[in-house]
Image 1 (tube, helix red, strand yellow):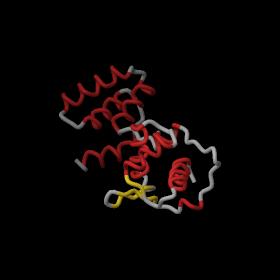
Image 2: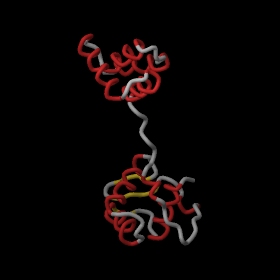
Image 3: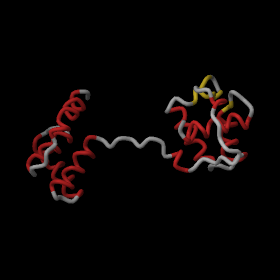
Length: 155
């Protein structure tokens, strides 16, 4: 189990309840246990719901896993890393710009300017323009052509 699951297990065990309201959740995390600020408690709750570890029914939150089997030391305190959650994957455009800057030798600002110019001149989507600019610079972006095609066709 990860730290997020452990954090939720400790919270529900210490509160002695199977369900908590959103307010109870936030108060417990921020005021009772002093793990996080109220804003961070909200982020913890949102991240837990997003990951499917908490289920929201009516106005209650309940764990979607068997938290009673998870063991944690009495002094358990979650680190702030638990709030980072999974990092979102960079967009295709960001990936292309990164390749252009690292392999093409351009600064980010210059790379984006060239892509914008190509987009205006050719009347194509920004990702397509980035592929063209990368190709002009000799940067291999063959691994991103399929995903860019899917992205553009899905619009």
